[in-house]
Structure formats: C-alpha cells, structure tokens
Length: 185
Image (cartoon, rainbow, N blue to C red; front, side, top):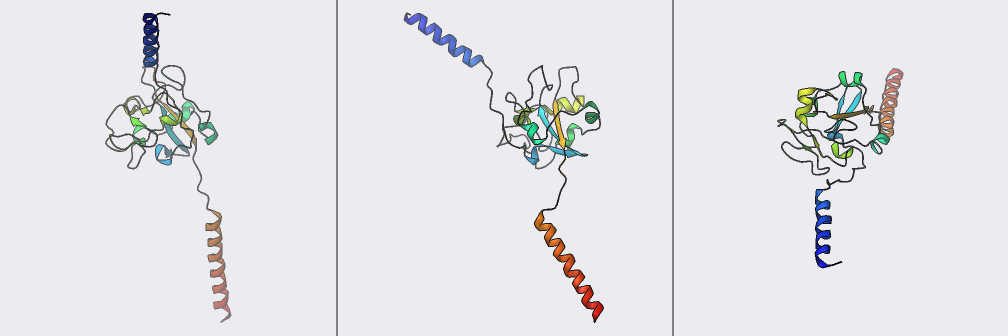
C-alpha cells in the first residue's frame, strides 16, 4: 500500500472515530439520595432526556433494577410529582452547575436552584435532564419530541436500627423500674 492510500485510510479512520458519539460508562452504583425525590410512597428519579425506549436513547435498568428502580405506570405518572419537585436546595446538580460525582447537569432551563438529575445512572449516552420539557409537558411520552423518562421505586420505610431499639427498650425498662420503686415507698 503506498503512502497516499495509508494516509487516506488513516484519515478515514480518524474521521469515523471523531464522528462516533461518545459513550460514557453507566454508573453502576446506587443513585445518591440527593439525585432523586420522594413523592407519595415512591422515590422518583429523572432518568433520561428521552423516551424510555426508541427515539434518542434507551435507558438501561440492568443494574438499577436491582436497586428497585422501574418505569412507572401511566396512573403512577399522573399521580406523581411535577418537574418543579426535582428543584431543591442540596440536590445533586448545583444551581447552574454540574454534579461533580456523576457529571449530571440541567440541559434546558434555569431552575433557580439546585436540581435532582440521575441520568448518568440510567444512560451511557446522556448526562443531562431537560427541565423545560417536563415543566412544559408534564409527562412522557408527549408525542411532540419533548419526552423525558422518570423511574420509580418503593420509598424506603424508616426502620429503627437495632441499637436504637435496644436504647429505647432500656429507657422503657428504667421507667418501669422507677415506677415500681415509687409504688413500694
């Protein structure tokens, strides 16, 4: 192969590599508590700036489903939160910034505060959530190309730790002993 053919082949390979969309690895770790919200009896995470399948990119639940995450039913979406519920001080995406751990960011509107976005935990293509799409459309699929995906799981029930229970039990036993002692005197 002469040098001209080698140069042309090298240039073609370089252009193909540059044209291929960059794909980051999924974050196979539990979604941090400041990257989702609890609304009603469910935890809600903003999982993708696209419809759940087809369109601009599928979500991947292979790891996150082991953490209880799943797609909501239409009834759950209708009874669920609004986009503004994902805006709160201390959320993983700082106001007008990027989450330093996951790389998530708000890809659309100025929310006026921090914003919960969990896309990097469900997509290896996108790292943003389009707040404006949900703020304008409310739920997916909208049919107008502004489709977002939220996922849900049952909200954790706060169960006291064994040490807390034993401390509480010791307090009850002490109160009962004091009561008995007062009754004898």
